[in-house]
Structure formats: C-alpha cells, structure tokens
Length: 232
Image 1 (cartoon, rainbow, N blue to C red):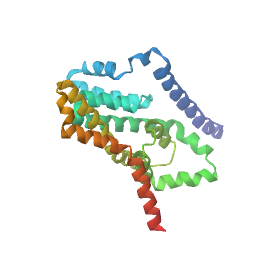
Image 2: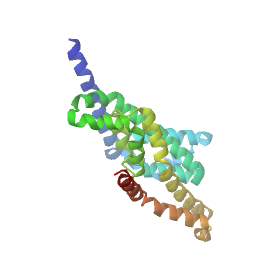
Image 3: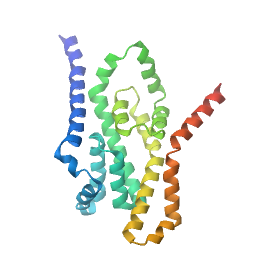
Image 4: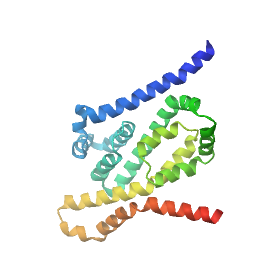
C-alpha cells in the first residue's frame, strides 16, 4: 500500500503542475484579461499604488513570470515607469523573484515525476547539470534561452537552487540593463518633449547597447568554441 501511495504522489503533483501551466496560458491568452495586459493599462494600474508602486511592480512582475506574461512587456513597463536606472533595479528584482517562484513550483510539483521518467541515457545529463549547475544556467541565460520555460524546466532537474539563483542573477544582468536603459532613455526624451535629446550621447549609447545585445548569444557561442579549442 505504501509503495503504491509513493508512486501516486509524484503523478498527482505532476498533474497539478500541468493543470497550472495550462490554466496560466489559457487565462493570459484566451480570456478577457488579455485586453488589460498592455503596457499602458498595466502601467496606469501600477502607478495607483503611490509610494508602494515599486513593491507592487516587483510582485506583479514575479506573478506575471509565473503566468507566462511576456518578459519584454513587463520590462518595458518597469523602464517606462521608473526610468533607466531604478527601472533596471526593479526589473531585475522582479525577474529574480519570478524565476525563483517558477523554479520552486517546478521543483515541488514536477521533479519527482520527472525523475521517475529519466532513464539511464538521460540520467547522465541530469547528473551533469547538477555538477555544473551554475555554468549551465549562466550560459543559457546569456544566450537568451526562453526565460519562463527555463525557470520551470530547471526546477525539474537536479540543479541546486543556489547554482540556479546565482547563474540567473548574473546571467540576466546584462540583457536587463541594456533593455531597461534603452526603453527608459527613450521614454525620458519622449516625456520631456525635447526631441533634440534623441541626438544626445545617452540615447546614442542606449541604442548602441540595444543593438549589441543581439550579438551577445553569438559572442557567448564564440567564446565557448574558443574554450573547447584551447582545452583540446
């Protein structure tokens, strides 16, 4: 009886996990709520929180990540409301909280069932991720692996949370700063109405960083290839 119960537990958790993922996607994409998920409407809603707006935004970002809201939408809102610098801080905090919550959801509800399905062939990859968790997570973040699926997916592996957290924290810094700096800077010029500001060094720098961000995955791949050549 006990062994049968032990087998049912992971399956029940996995079923809840799948239901949660499907429900999150359905709610966000196929219900009237979708009409309110725009940068303008969400931005106005968050600004009603007054001095608690940063906290409300960080929590909203974290929940949004768990419910598969596009990261670009959430990041754009943060940069538009708080500017390029505070926007970066709040976006990073929201992303870290959301990625951690997603990881724990995947770990608690899906890990046991995933482990039961792993055969000998996949087991070595699972063990490799555990041994090289930080490097694996950091690499995937730098090459812009889809953010939310990776959050849940890493929870299904044997990677330690400390490696996942540190790899994510470091891996998203560059992309987050570039995007928030770009959006925040453009928003400042738009709000001021001084279009000559589009020719300022700050705007030029932000545009340069934004363009550079598209080459980051290739640069990471290039460095990885060089490392392999040096090790051989």
